[in-house]
Amino acid sequence: MAISQQLQERIEALAAELRYEVHGPRGCPPWGTKFVDMEQETTEIGDAIHAFGKQLAAAAWQRGFAAAPRKAFVGDGQDANWSVWRRHFSRYTPILDFIHAICYVFAATVAGRPLREGAAIYRQWAQWVWSGEVQQVIEALRVRQQELGLPEKDEQESPRSKVADALRYLENQQSRMHYAEYRRLGLPITSSHIESTIKQINRRVKGTEKF
Image 1 (cartoon, one colour):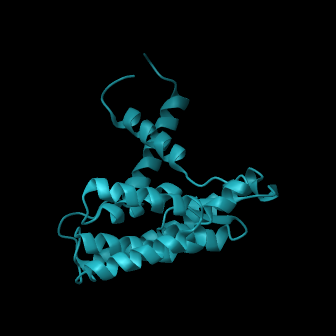
Image 2 (cartoon, rainbow, N blue to C red; image 1 turned 90 degrees about the horizontal axis):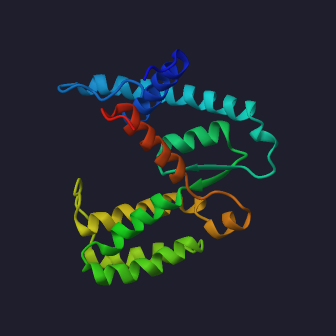
Image 3 (cartoon, helix red, strand yellow; image 1 turned 45 degrees about the horizontal axis):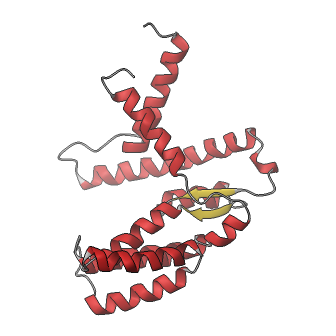
């Protein structure tokens, strides 16, 4: 079945957006890229993020978001997201995506424990996060870190490194994790439905099947 020129252009635009989401503005660096080249690439990505932030702010203004009495900026823990928030959306309530938060919490609770034991602890910690009592999770993670010890430099995937990652993540993002208050105000606490839609479009655009 033939598709219209307008639909073809839209598909190409969506594919470009998806490539940007996955690989950034220039794509993955080729094998053998020197550090100085990657440093230049990092500078260019920073410039691209700044440019994207301006475009995002313009789009939000055009759609009248500024007039809304309650506004939220939802993102994961990447510094780039909060750089855009600080520069362009500081009047919006900053919210760490709840799904990202509990993923770190789950990884920490089962690290170095049998799954059954870790699952019970996870249910308690996840309830604390849901209720906005993040400090209790942080305190529990500090105790667990003392039990396991600190990870060595560049240590990855060990139980103590996963606990350290979760502890660092929650400490850095704690100010954006007042989920009980956000729900009371009717604000969103996750962007997972948007990310899911992007993945569906990605599969349809890049897949060989027609459905």
